[in-house]
Image 1 (cartoon, helix red, strand yellow):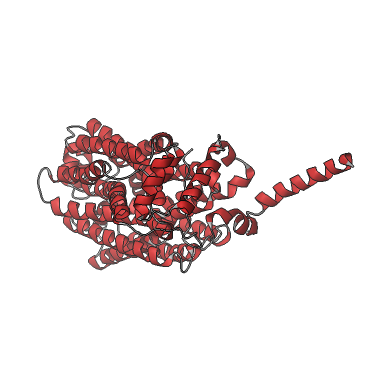
Image 2: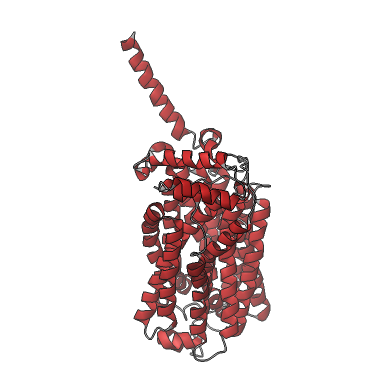
Length: 514
């Protein structure tokens, strides 16, 4: 089990050191893993809106689009087209469990290198695909790369960064994902008129961040935590001195050694994770990932060009609208970086629920009223839909997007932290797969009701955040149990019951001792 030293963004120990150029280079290179993931999210929706791509691999869908009286809601409903997007995430789900073992046994750096190699193979297969089978096999390889990268990169960033900016760097991983989405949207728009191989350019450019990660990882350091965990103690101390820029790293070094010793004593972290006292953070981690996907965000980001074409935009205009939403996504993520430690996690989540609920209802209402099975929306209504999508994306980008990853990383005790976080990663990939595979069919059958479906989930999310999600702002990670879980009106019963049992057992034993 890999030991992880993740400081929270509030009260953290001050270790000696500074933000060195060495750390900056390592972080930028590792962040290419986020760019890989984000670019793929953006590019998959873009190419599925390109006629050349559809004619080559999904001729039935392209033929349906050409009909004068095509069904607005069903023109993209095709199981194979959905499989093109969703196949990546089922592969990533499986890969995340393998990557967890790889991180522990061989280190974060080799795991990232493996991720980039899988991704490069996947890019080559999808770019030069000649049939649907080759295309899907390529997507599966991309999924292996995403699974390995999403497991290794957040750990790498958390362990390498100085404690005082560690929390911000956790959110920055989400920022790099949003940048990748934006770049993909820009590329899709730029190559949309290059016939007949524009889609191949979009797919091929995905290899750039993967190649940067592959080559760049040769020049970066393994994290001190990983080295010490694998008994390379002196090398770990030397790397720690180098990345901190000081010779006196004894306090931080001792804390890493202690964390590794504690983690090494837990031989079955998944077994411990199933115990009663571990349920509160486990439930929070899984539910946060489920809710993150059932906001409808990935349905919108995957299929934004398709969605905008559905409401009446032309192909080029739809891709341009996706660029706008991608830019909103990037800029809004900065809001979370600035506010998360000032206003707290719950405030951002609750505000976003109100914002996202209103926008989903407005979009659904407009489509239900004005978008019939055939024909387009009036231009004014179509513009309102684009604006509402941007407002929705903004709310998600400063709340459930980054906090869906941050909160699970800070609520588990050290001995179950990596095991618990692997549940978060796998839950995210499973829900992403379900949404990606089902959205276009749901749009066809539910029509405008799909947006009310997501709005209903947002109500549930808001109630959960209001009553069951504790505030973790400013609480040291090692004090979460005493200061958060045992003080919460609902979750404290998972600890108090255990204490009551221990007390009763003690009282039963005491008379026999007397």
